[in-house]
Image (tube, rainbow over all chains, first blue to last red; front, side, top):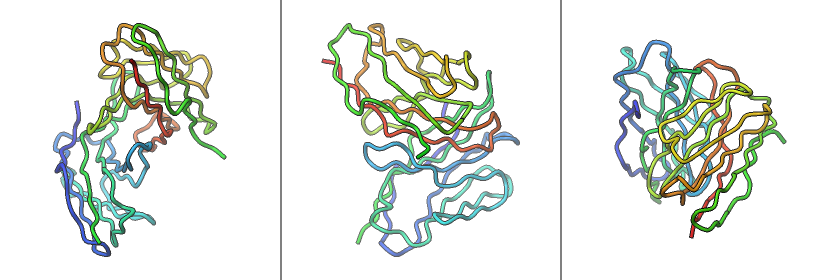
Length: 112
Length: 114
């Protein structure tokens, strides 16, 4: 079962910040939030992950709410090449260890 | 270059035949995963393995089989029991057994059964 909920699609103007929301209301205390993106017919690309603190790297920022029930991925200056499907996932601990479960994702369209 | 290699990129098979998809990683990762993706859909977990000689069923394991005889290799066999095998198959790996380890993906194998 997917443990995250995302809007199916979003638009963003080139050069503007893209803010992608994700709900993970059933997340457990030891489960991390991850973000990946997938450009058509390629393997998903890792973007960023976090537990409870906000995180930033060269690609994006991740803002996690204090109750950890939702998060937002921020692409600070979206470009046309950022058009992709963005997946918000949690790593779930089960039999045999952690497994990574993907939901349906958000299709981001960056427009010129 | 370190990474995950899936081969072949495109694969065609006749209905009723078993087919094996290759996945090799040189990242020294303990965990490996197989996902299936259908057009316009997200990824669904088929099997995963945390260590050599051990693997667990994911959400859609029926009609598939795997082996993990070597740390770097995790082949997936799509058997004739899989009712709708045409799909995009993705392999991934991650280091360690904790939740704080990202997974890296291969470029996928597109399987078409005719």
